[in-house]
Amino acid sequence: MLRNPHDAEPYEPQADEPEHHALVGNDTASRLDEAILGGERRYTLSELIDRTGLSREFIESYWRWMGLPVTHPTERWFTQGDETALREIAALFESEQMDRRAQMTFVRSLGHTTERLALWQVEALVEHLARRHELDETSARLLALDRLPSVAETLGRQLEHAWRRQLAALTGRTAIEFAGARAGAPTDSHQLPLPRAVGFADIVSFTKRTAGLGSAELAEFVQRFEAGARDVITTAGGRVVKTIGDAVLFVADDVTTGAEVALGLAESTGRALGTAGPDEPEIPVRVGFVWGRVLSRFGDVFGPSVNLASRLTELAEPSTVLVDTATADSLAASSSYALTAQPERDVPGIGLLVPVRLQRAYTG
Image (cartoon, rainbow, N blue to C red):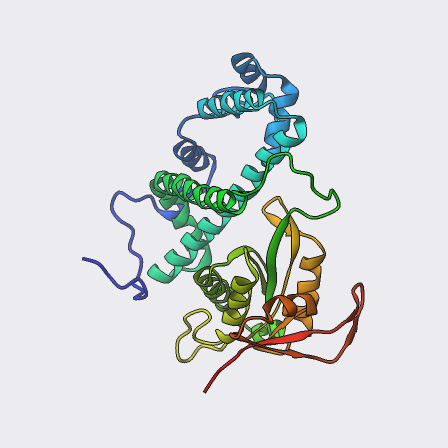
């Protein structure tokens, strides 16, 4: 029978379930390790070099880029899966004639993303088990260790499915955006390649609002903000680049979508931003966004417009949106928006800046 996941019930170990104290120690670590990796660690570094025919430098670089450096080369540390992965990635690099810089970027993207993903998912499981079974932190973590082998296969398949869907979405957007571009057409080498709306939404008085919160309450507050912001951004047609503590960075492919994302975030305070309950605090944000050109690298965006959007966010009042004059000019032709110039400001690193408040143009 399905149960409400919010209804906690005391945890009672099952007859075939190891007690928590049995989960501590090398034997348990080995059992979990083998279950998660899909096989035992059977090869030393030298044996792996012999089996793959790859150089020691390449293999050590691969693991360092993954964030898992080989610190004990004489230990039996590698699995059959490691051998297969190394053969496949080396073949890809050779077929595509990738230089060392490209190789490093590809492997680091895998290591950085999956490290964060694994941590995020384990913490989510720990939180779930603590709530579900009314466990303390230590007991919840120990129980999570016992649960992980049974969920790892499903999570692995979900990861591949999500990656393919994201890759398809990216290639679709790219094909549409550059459909009219001519290969080899001359470009300004000093011009950043991608025109994008880029903006930040920053929680107002984050430190004050979270002062005194325990770990569970703080985690809930941050998760509510992030989940709510992501929903608003994706619904309006934008994309989340990253979250930075108490702020979220977003992009959109055209200036109007950028405006809708920014206004949606500013308007979605409290219960709308984060699906808060009636007794939970509001989460008002201030928003700045700019239409400009950016460089996309390492899953992030860079350029003067990103810096300008950040500064505008700092200047914005709670639940309002600020843009620069160039972005305001791009939106001025639309009857959907009202644009109001604000007093000129001298912003360090930017210079004199005239922020423009962006609002919806309501007609009676």
